[in-house]
Length: 530
Image (cartoon, rainbow, N blue to C red):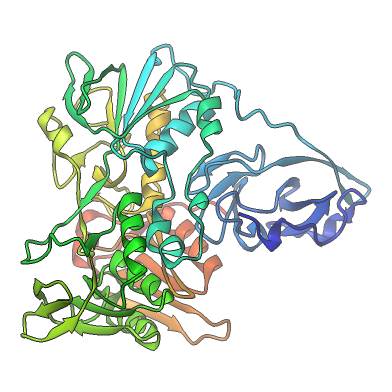
């Protein structure tokens, strides 16, 4: 997706710039021909890479440098300054690299390197590399894993099995711009079909896996087909929690998880005038915002006293509520739904409200049934070790189903967010190839409410205090969720760089399990220079 950051601006780097224009840990955007190029300095080393993130065109010069990487301020993608490779999702494609000449106090960009991402060198391949790898799930984790296997030089057969009949797509967009009518459907695919074909990633779509036999190493599909595997990644995601309500099975009542679901909601908006959203979850509120963008009257029904209070606390929850109320959303908080009729919704207090469109968004459950039937250890999700391997050797899990030992909080956690799923897919892929790389990424997600984007880094199931910083001279909002005086998580609005810096600080924090649960002090690890 194009942006102004793709355009050539700043100095002509082929003619050179004085090296003192780029301080240590600093960045400068210029151009080489028509390419926008970022020059970064780390000590005595200078690097030149593409200036724009390959995921939603974020301006990398507004991000941060960490060691020999650059991180995007929009959604925290991370790229190598040395090679341009994607090191952390949500970006799935590399940025270009450029050659530099440094002489007589001047920095010159001399040419664009030829990248060989389609035929990379094999770095982590071990003698025991499995000849056939199967990925069950074609969502965030599965797609990221398949692409990482090829990036790492894996030459064997990759098969990705998806229950949906569509290739991997940008699921977060379903409740945001696509549902709002601000993004065309051709923005959704994560990769063009020809890229999957070029990378020889085979897809079996439209039929779920019904049986996993870990002894025979076979998978059976609902359509009667079967597949053998030598290594397996389970990335089956999650399913919406369905409400047992009178009238909930009517055609104007929808859940939102898949592209098919979203298309059905969009089709309903053509004639709908009044919508009721049941649930003030992230999905529910983003759906509310998208429906308001289509000029549909929206009511939100939820048992909570404030939207998202359990995640963000009362003040930020109230702020989010006001964002929606200012756009005309009416909240019925502290209420539940009693029944749904053809044109109305009745609440538990007996009040009746118009509704020719109903969307239910009350959370999801991890899709663990396949793993459980195969004998995989289940503990509020699929239990995995630090390398994302399940209790069955050679069977890994990633994404919404995976419950992993988090080194930052000291406990086992499961997180249902897109970027976490992609990053786990990347790590699992490398570990299938023998890398033995612990998954230690700090969880990150973002949520969009009209023109307001909320970033959240870390993981705080509970806290004993909130530090609030808003109305500052630089604007924006920041809340730190504290245990024993140490931040477990940070939420920001309008402070993208601060969110990146918080993520980096949290990466080097180790919180004993008891501290995270009781508020005792956390222990910072030795932190490298950013």
